[in-house]
Length: 241
Image (cartoon, rainbow, N blue to C red; front, top):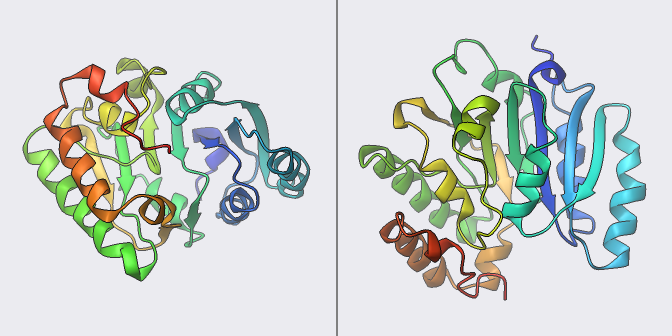
């Protein structure tokens, strides 16, 4: 069995997640072989209640996880700040609303037969409520197309990087307010990119509920069309409203 603490650090950007992030941490703590693994939460919560929950209730996972709470910002900033603290060979960028529903997931990924030395970036399929799940299947399709056009696409909800390869890209760009995950993932060599097929990585459909389905698909297409235009990613495109 792989001792994950020797290989992996998990970085989670967080802002006013209240109880949701506890669900995320609970399921991480149930991963087989997770004992002692460092989890860095880059938090920018503005609501005191969210800060209180994170600071006090996360302590219940200390027997399994080594949790550090640091200053956060927008996701690009938070992920960058967290990555600067990583010393393990791999870093997993995980969103605060991601639920790992298979307690063998990370063990299976780190199986030497799957995560080989030539893989720099690994992602997974993401599932959500049935009403919105079709749109994540669209993401799966685009992910396959992205490899054929040498522009790998991995959502920021789950990006597992070989740390050396991550820093070779320069890391997350702190000025970017939109689709910073795609900007980073498209820089990896397509031959060093892999998708772990699973239906056990689940997320809340919050963004689809807040923004229209059409908006999400439209911005996905625009991100690709502007893939070589850095200024496009520095604008928020009303994503955070």
